[in-house]
Length: 189
Image (spheres, rainbow, N blue to C red):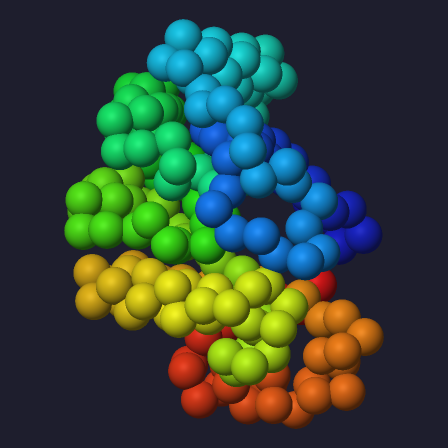
């Protein structure tokens, strides 16, 4: 390969929405906070669709992100079903699995499931408690941090999304200091 040529690697990213419902009521959220949970039949069809796209395009790697609403509201059985179906279709080394969740419903069973299937965890927290609760609702911070700490006790890495608003932007230093003190990686929205 010549120096001027670049090999382009395409890795499709699929987003699976197991539940449209969400118990949080963040002020700036565009989600409906209510809605159905995916059925096993729809989950199977989603996995078949992913397999069809990956197979027909010759991809060797793929990413699947569980998003929502709140994906944990779909429950242990459905998420286990989907993760197992993906594992049966795709080699673990070729599959990047992630979850974007507020972690309010995270428990030991979910943690064991995510460790087993190598699911990376992402959550949304906007910085220190006062800033986060002002933007996302009273008590949001504590519930998310409980989930973060539980995941960490299970050896799971948690990354964060911090949303800046006109109210929190002037306090950017407090936000950055919070993530540094907690040793949490974060991206900015």
